[in-house]
Image (cartoon, rainbow, N blue to C red):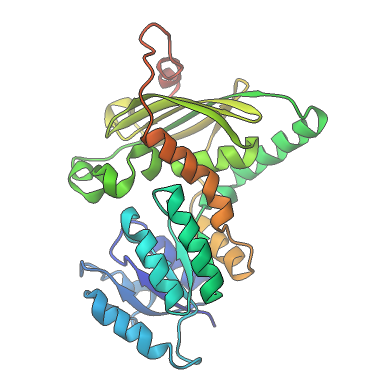
Length: 314
């Protein structure tokens, strides 16, 4: 039985990890979060040792790591984005693999020391990229791959729209601080940029048209696709839905707002097989969102941007 610890147990995404660990019949040995609103642990692993102080959590993990029988095999990281780098380091230095939520790190230069640490500790870093396991995305990749076998130089026209409602709490929390979350393109967009690169190939060029706390739009040219993207947490773009996810390829819509229930479990299964997404897999998307975050805005006031047409279909 694989043994786990969890950092960020009170976080929004933590229940997905708890469910996945239980689904694969793992054991959650310890959990940590400065916030003590973690009653959900009782629904999954009621005997888990819980800590609100990192120093005590660190001491506990260090103590049990002295015994091969009691040590944890994996530390799952659900903490705020800006802490991922530090918590990944902690996991590897504790003799455990790291399973980290997106984004793995905020900046591409942070990946280099992590690569070195993997070699030094002989441990692995895995990132949760659940959209790669979504059935609709998998089918899209299969379709595009088949078309590219027939015409390797084909360039697809792609519109990405992701709208998800967030209340006033968002701007007050760490997610509203770009230095901690990476901004909207990183915090809610990186999964989509990852799958688009995964399907259509490497990034050639990028420009940003809008990048506020609540909304981002821009254009990315990939090896085999021109991508116009629109991301927003502004509820005024949504009427009767809380979330809208859509990828339009050459005029054909792929709407995938459902089908997310077991994606973390599938991700964990592949990680335990040794097939999880590692540093090389996440690097292209991290580089792209870092470039978006630091880009100068392109004035498109004289051009009709795709989002104004796309919104009528929500």
